[in-house]
Length: 347
Image 1 (cartoon, rainbow, N blue to C red):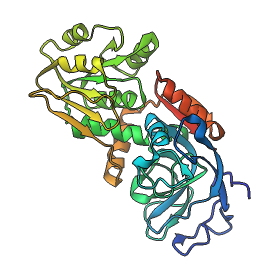
Image 2 (image 1 turned 180 degrees about the vertical axis):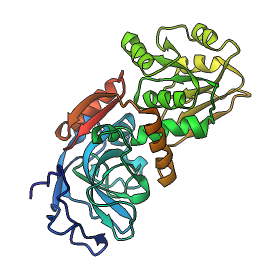
Image 3 (image 1 turned 90 degrees about the vertical axis):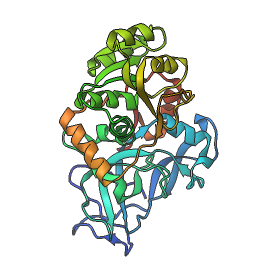
Image 4 (image 1 turned 60 degrees about the vertical axis):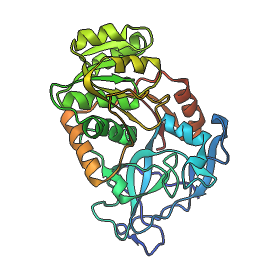
């Protein structure tokens, strides 16, 4: 049976499952199968291919989402190479940690979501597989309504990166108005959002990026100062930005340039980086270094949504690929120098 296309007002009903809340009268049934980009073994981009798989059946505490847009990121590449690193890694493994779409069905214990509403979600190691699919079932606590001002396409790009960005600014570094911050890797999916959230908090930002296009990009997003992370003089740029030393570094890329950013810290300054940054920053006496993971949850999404609406978030999308070209999307991620985010357009 061909996968149902969800457009305009919702026309989706629940699966025949006693754990689901029935949709409105007259709605049609969900298809039994769907298209998904999945892997059958670890490897390069060539192992990602279209599969016909059963539509997931959400449990009582889950939401079934008809996916419109899914994010594509470097951590998806990592899972493709090392699927054994997650618990729910049975083949065929559908990739993708985040996306946005319409609620297609809700479990009997789910409150606060209705069929047809626009939602976005982040779920690492999702029990039913990932977001490179026409449908995904996600625990309701990892789902949020799309905030005002964002399209489904934009929301589908930012659940993982948005939570990572704001939790780095607020929770890992505890930044406040007037603080100075170097965002190393500010032009990427996380960095482009962290820059905007830092500015929302009143933090002054020195952004590193690569190339004239990268520098122009982060300037446009509101960086107070910029420096080329590959060819620029980090020490001179940091001294001009904060003569007494910067308060913090948010490390979204590793290597020698990161170490030069850390050299620019004031005494008592701090560093934070999300899991997955390689190489990790080197330990230094007297320099607190925090490694953190993005945490999804009701309160976490509520805070993210407030910040998105307050800052009128710009969501830079560098490239968009159809689901059938998920392998090409991952190739583009591996090629690097992405200004913003890569997405898959499912519908």
